[in-house]
Length: 223
Image: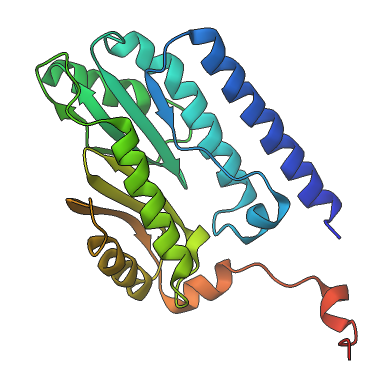
C-alpha cells in the first residue's frame, strides 16, 4: 500500500503535470519540448532523485517555457529543455549564436538550476534539419533496449534525442554509464551518444536506493 507521503508526492506531481499540459495548450505553439516525468507512485519511489529534486526539475522545465518564448524566435527556432537533478540540458535548433546564448542565459536565471549543458545547434535556416518523429523513434528504441538489459535499472536513465544524437542523463555509476552508452551506440539510427551523467560510486548508489518499508520487510513470506 502506498504511504501517505508517496500519495502526497504523486498528487503534487500529477497537479504539476496538469499545469504543464494546460500551459502548452494555452501557448498555441509547440516551441518548447519538456523532458516529462513519471507520476506513478512506484516510479516516483524508485527514482534516484529525491522527491524534492523531482518537483524542482518539473518546475524548472515549466518555467523555462515562458522564459524561452521571450529569448528566441518561436517561428524559426525550437529549443528542448530537460532537467534532471537540477542539471539542465538544452537541445534544438536556433538561427544564430546570439539566440543560443540568450536561451542559456534565460534558463540560467531560473531558481534551483545547478548547471546547464547547452547542446543547441545553430542552423542559420528556417528549415529544421531532422523530423521530430525520427528522433522520437530512436528514443523509443533506446528506452526499450535499456529496459531489456538485465544489468541496468532502466528508469535510472532519461533519454532525449535531437538530430540523431542521443543524450543520456541520470545518476549512475561508471559501470552503468559505460553499459548504457555501449547499448545505445548499437541501435540503428543513433548517430552519436552524449553522456550528461552525474557519476556516483557504488557506495553512494547504495545510499540513494529507497529503504524497503519496515512492515513489508517483517511480513512472513507467502508459501
